[in-house]
Length: 231
Length: 134
Image (cartoon, rainbow over all chains, first blue to last red; front, side):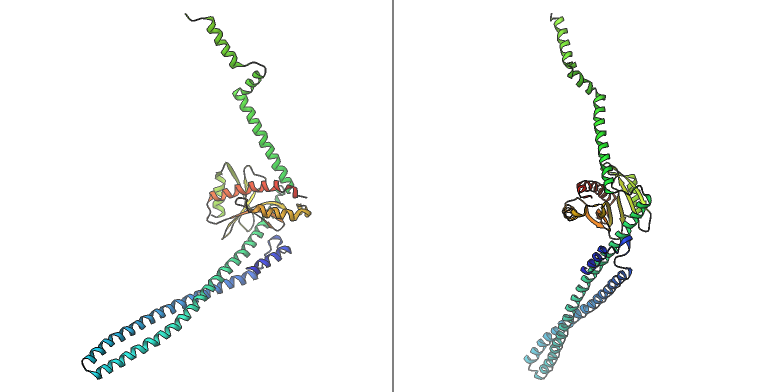
């Protein structure tokens, strides 16, 4: 990953990538994709092999158990033969027991070797998986970079051809300020309009002139009441 | 979410009181120019890839900047990039950009949120960094 990032940075600093030209060229991309496919293939093979070995190991475990079971069964037979004084028969059974025990030991040794191979293979699978994730991440970085460059090149071409939209930051800032001023004006205007519509502005002016409609109304009512005293 | 679906969705929708004016940018890549109402000065460009939806707005070009204060600007941009909601600061070619990347499985609401946030952030950033312009 680091080598890819360094390659990208070197190319970017050198300005190689003008107009969306791929930083890591198509060839580099294809190599990465090939590496990805190889890794995927290796992983698939390793997993298949692992599955086969694990099945073999399970089968061996079954055979070992079977040999051990047979040995212990024969041991009982041998005891019975000895108890019955059948020395020859007991010897024959003992030979069988030896056979079972030897096979169990042999199978166990084979299985131990197998287990070692399984452990090694599991490690290989993990390594391949990690490698695969690394390649995928690298490829994503390379592809995203190319996409961004192509996209921005496309935007620039379009903006340039439209002419009108190509703004310097200063022009953009000027337009932002104009809009913000317009919005402020609109807010002030609508607040003024609101006052006019509700008559609040007139009330304010009358009050300022010492004419208070509310106070006048109260005075009028008081005068009326005084003019017609209670019976 | 593909470009066509998004174009249709944005044209008909409002989000947080904003409308979206969508214009496809002609070329090989599927790119949309989205103008967010109330932040028309900083259009957001959007492109969809296999792995992400990339939205970006241009801030300024390198040649517009005061070269003596470039380091200070970069330092400030790096620091501001972290707390800025849904946006990061970056550079592509000569363009300094503010951008955000979304999962391709994002819905229209998330994308609209991103577009509004980016357009507003671009305005705030431009005004913040105005002093660094040459």
